[in-house]
Length: 226
Image (tube, rainbow, N blue to C red; front, side):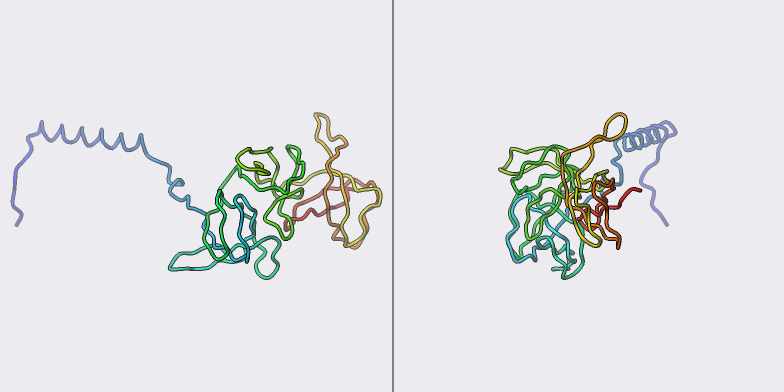
């Protein structure tokens, strides 16, 4: 049997009801989208055998659970010993071997470059046996960042490019040099930025041929346009 501790008059009950409705409207007006709560830090453990510098480019090779928490294992590009995973960019502190770190989440990143001159819009990517980035694919250069020497701002970009094969073409199952074209209001014009691209077919790409280059496993793959 319940014990009554009081009662509302009809007028008091109406006031409580109106206040409850007003409170619910306030909650609806300040509600935070649910997807914001899904954001989580990109935590990794360094298994490269080297110290990762600030803004260094890293390759995911596996995952590992440590003390009940899951971490991404990262190594220095390019590592073919395990999973050939995506690439991350370290935050603003160096990470010693076997230590823990947090990667940048983007969409605009800071990346440690190899110091070469890279124009805005030039495609860049990881370099072999290095935590630096240079001319390649996977990212687009947005220009220098004065926070540290040789640090640039980049954005992930994996779209294809129109290009022209070099004077020697590209032999079958081999790599060669292509020159990217520049988009214009009426089509494409000759450009000056060159990239290394792979011909993975059994047929050679002829000299000065028009090609499309696609990013595949952090390399450009060239396909001749007939």
